[in-house]
Image 1: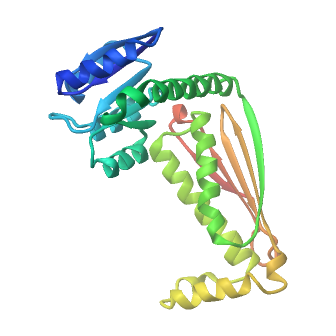
Image 2 (image 1 turned 45 degrees about the horizontal axis):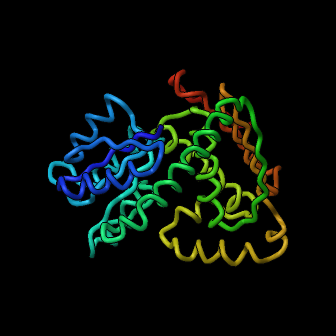
Length: 270
């Protein structure tokens, strides 16, 4: 049986939503007057889903979404929105809410929206159980010298580190910064053969223009950056290689990240 926590400071709205939900076989509703009471109830027993109003005293819906996302990331949240609060609902979706239903459409949309979100949550939970069995994986990427590819790749690698429980949030930032520097160095100083002194000069716009020009000219345009990422429960190893002139600079950089529970990170170059 799925337990759904309904959060609304207006008793009539709260029980209307709960009644609609309990008409569905296999669902039961519990109630909270505001976000603070909701968090207290979640500490006692984690529900399968939270349905919350946006506008509430003490702690509003946006603050509740943030708190649940931070401490109970596997619990999906659906928002009930009043007329004119669509922009706030969009902001809540960006914070991690799963969906929203306008209050004027509760009778029509609440049950099917809840079914859809609970279904996706079950799939996500099943996937996580499989991922918990993953002990090692290796990824390989071949990048052109387009700097716009760097951040999406880093985000993808950070997701894998989170999945393997290797680092905390601060560690993700540090690793992301180091990877960004390695990738940009491989593209600009390795493949495009631009000097670091020019990059550090005051005319940064001229430097960026030279990057854009060179990456479309031979022989630079044919050069690639190879990224190898190996993840295990013990460490993450990132190897960044470029096609630059190896005789004038190291063209292979390795970063080795130890898991969070060891409380340390090491980096080496080869």
